[in-house]
Length: 179
Image (cartoon, rainbow, N blue to C red; front, side, top):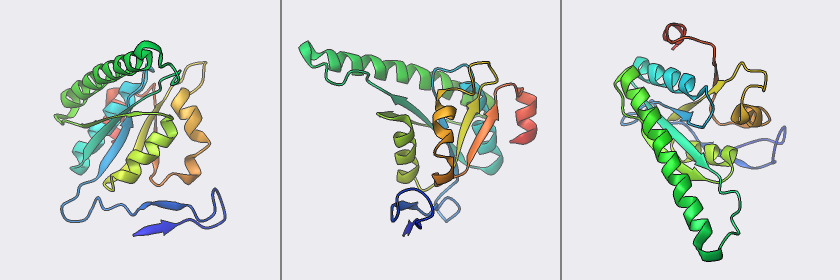
């Protein structure tokens, strides 16, 4: 079943994602965690992993790659750039998956997408009706909360699932008490 958004915000008549099915028979709730190059990615992975264990759910880890110059076709430069970006993404997901396994004994699903981060996050959520929450970690540094959190703020009111922001200064014990 597809829900339709009213004219109050956003694109009038734009379809929302399918209803979440995570608590129906044969499904389980999952959280989506973004794995990026920021220092705080670990806090989101830790929270998501601990939450998944507590609710009997799962974790989907997403790494979005952006090829800066998609028009580079000379001698296969774009293909080389894409291959390097995928290799870097696999290494980041290996590190994050290892952390999730060490923290909670779970093996997360891994997804690599290419393109705009916000658009790819939306697509992953729309394609997996068991995702019930997006988990992001926000930096407490002077540069601001981080690039994904900063970009996401403009879209929070239109997201199809709740967004959990985990402060980067929270310790493992703090997160254990919250998740």
